Length: 119
Image 1 (cartoon, helix red, strand yellow):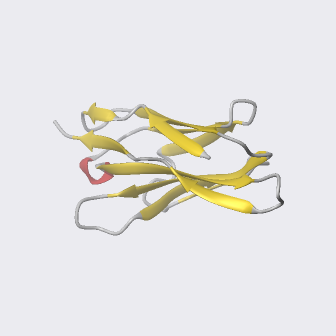
Image 2 (tube, rainbow, N blue to C red):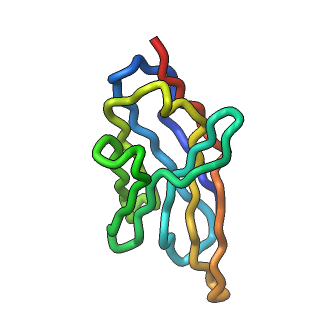
Image 3 (cartoon, rainbow, N blue to C red):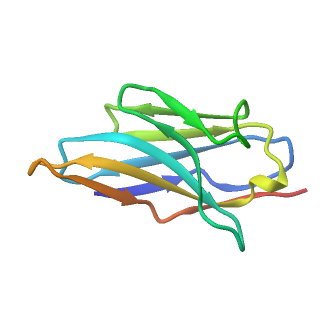
């Protein structure tokens, strides 16, 4: 299973960005999809998660500013990030659980994409 992220970059404080992550490969379906982030010198942290049914959960630090969504037909997850501040600067990683044809589940990671919030 391959996950390819896009949409990162440099944005000014208060601005917005939308990240996308598309899953491809040989699988039956994608179940939970998540966004993590890792800032320099810090541990990777879970930002948001969305189930196949659309239930969502967020880290306290992003609640009310970030929105996770998905398009199941495209096996794609999105992260709309609003009111960005410098503390949101990090490499953002997509993570997904894929149901395989042998009835196992495979957790996969994207390569990461840089988000920098700076004036």
